[in-house]
Length: 477
Ligand code: RVP
Image 1: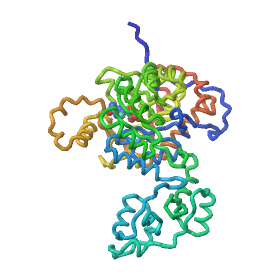
Image 2: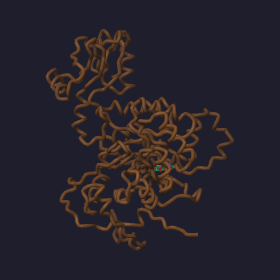
Image 3: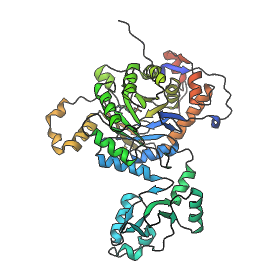
Image 4: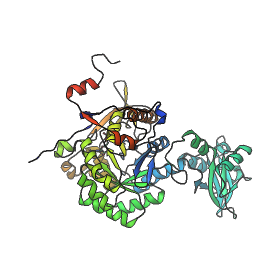
């Protein structure tokens, strides 16, 4: 039997090349996420319940990447997460939240808190009747008063089709923060806010759709309600769906890709995970727009220990890319990224982007509470095939009786529950990773990721080479 050799990030280095680059700002990190979606930085946050919900997706898209909302919640909740991202900023909010004039101040306060907005358009008989903002009600003691008594009735509005500059001028001249957009019959068409315009200027590299809304993806599984879920997510505005299964080179995954593409031909679809060229080919033939690669590479993954199966990540990427390149389909390297050097290596090996889990766990934007242990702050980070993640899923789907159910004894976890140190905001981490990657491009003598892939020359290291690569013979502070 011929046994091939498999390599991963720590087995190799990139050989430095003559560089024309003077400043990192000359480098360009734009890349293809999938056939029809371009990102400004090649970083995706993992569809895990301790990594990506709307908070993470918003932060990452603002930095130029994208977050994939995990699927371990009801369809309604996942749709809500997508809507939160899509509403977080846009040139114009379509279908802004509205309220009726005859509801009470208490209800208006509740709605504002629930939607996380500072004002609501008041709508009556399908027409704009006024606007009520937090300022109008914050110090109103009588919670039973009606919205109609406190709202601004003389609202300054704009007609559909105005440009951002025109909107800015109106907002400035009138000293207002919210500009409802209406049609000839005074029906509400949208809402432009000064906050959205400011955010647009604050995050110039954000990944956005054609309407100026942040990009966001969502995961679906291969069983049960996946078609219904896919439809609801697409309807809510998800830009890309990810068929998420541990063994993506399976009839199950291929069939799911077929079904989703048949039902929603224009859906941008990623599927995985695979670890070989054949796996990539089968998913591409089934119709995917990008292939996600990584079996057993994740920090919380024990698939290789439990099943004996997997491929070291660098080899998995190189093999998958060797096939996917012929079809012009991007490859996402998923799992095992610990620093910007790993990202540079994954991209140099041919991946178009990387998916990150543990590095983004433990941040302000990741779901879950911060815990304190021995005086240090942590957050939970767990594999989606871990025992407790699986228990949570069963609990949600089947109710509390699962806690006593015998079939839990038969569950074979392929992931672990873990804690990661609390790290503050993910924004700083993303900026460090992107900065390190820009330097990585420069060491390869490249201005773009494509150029780096052309120039890249890997060299294998021994364990002595690896030791030399780390800080050594000093006490690191
Ligand atoms: P990492 O960034 O090394 O923490 O890896 C994250 C990846 O690990 C995810 O994107 C997913 O592919 C994989 N994962 C998630 N859960 C599990 C598991 O329970 N085995 N693996």
